[in-house]
Image (tube, rainbow, N blue to C red; front, top):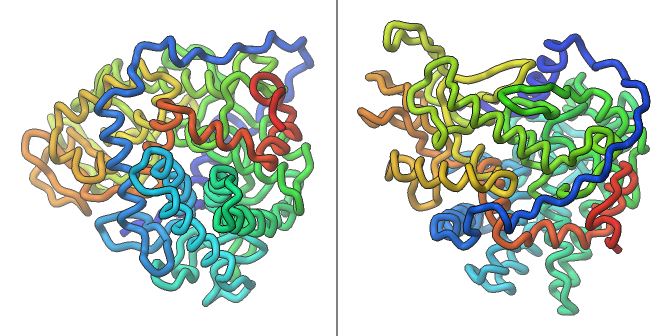
Length: 488
């Protein structure tokens, strides 16, 4: 099985920047555009109580609740294929538990106790620079952990972004479990300790940016987080730290490397190919109606930017320049996901190259597409463009049926073009329909359940608005307007 690592995403980001000749020149100062109004989600024609959304959200929640290790509480990277734990998946899972409690799928007490157990386990796990037997160092956790022991899996990196996604879930629990009950108070205390010990300044090896990660064997990875991609929330949490905050200059460096493009498949926006880069941070932070200096100058916000990225990718699927089978107005969605096989085959008289796990996406910097569609790409864009996402979810389930949709909702990915008599690396081929994964991945399941809930009730966004660390990070990054003006 091909390992997913932060380095893979880092390499993609570096290639995207290299393809455009590096960072763009700093533009001359310009008067700020008027603040963009929050998008009136309720006015967009898609029913938050649609039965499909309710069913998909609950099924996806149970992936996290049912599959967590009973001893450690860790969440698998993927299932049903046996795997290590992904610390990012743990962060998504912790957030999913607050949703399950709010929806009544589990009791608040059961969710609280599960969260408390996981946080205590992570806090007690060994920290240190040794290459073996450790879980974390300087507060950062290894990308993958052994499900049964919680120790570093093989030689993976100490990951700054995966630790960030874990901490986002930790802070979601800190703000959700807000009652005077002693057990909920313990959750808040454990969350504070875990977040406060992350030493963001240690990972700022090439100031002001933060590195992708570190290994005991080779030291810091040579790439730093520069925008736009999934690490927006990394800088928000790094700026908001009460103990080891980075300087506001880190946010300026982050936005300095943005790639704004005009008319890309019908949209003007800051581009990044895989949709997860437009979704992950907004699982937790409500960017609707708040702006930093960069977005004030553009007259939009990050919520609108993600909406445009979603619509651009849908237009790409409608135009379907490479002629992949099945693409259209209601079958679309490219992001990092599983795929059938690393192979080139002749199909329909032309060579088609396929991949297994790959960061698929559409951008002017680099277009990576092998006909593989990931339902999470559309589903996690539900709050941004519900009028096109909900029909896509309905059509994908209707057209492909049981191979695509089962006990835990959608499988990770499918490929209608890979309808060939060739054994895939994993998953299976259904004659007449194409390749379907067997697995779901935690980092793809998480955005589904969280963004459906954010569309239906705004629960996670409202919860995180109350978190002082998130509010502090946003303000230090220069965000103003909207709900942030009333935040405590």
